[in-house]
Length: 149
Image (cartoon, rainbow, N blue to C red; front, top):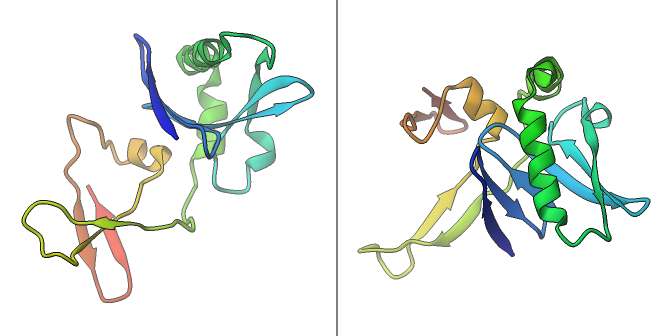
């Protein structure tokens, strides 16, 4: 089950099945340990153990989602965290990823399928992909798909 929580500074998308939160800047795991919610930046590389950013609240807090969002917003707005975020999110060069397969809509034939792949937010940021600037070029050489901006 996915749902969106909106706040003034950034739109946060929650994926409760995978315990992930996505912002315009980063992606996070949230989990419970020792009765508290914990937050890690998703790094997809060798920095997994160094991606912990904090523990914003206890599992007993009624407004735990708001506290997590406020914690993430404060973390992302604190310029002193930039070097840490750069360290754990850059240098990601390859990931293993599932392809989402859905029925094609519109005027497509009855058995037509649509295939989609998500781009990690750190990569999209490095490529300057945004809601206002989202056109990319895709090349396929028979074996690889190359996405360029």
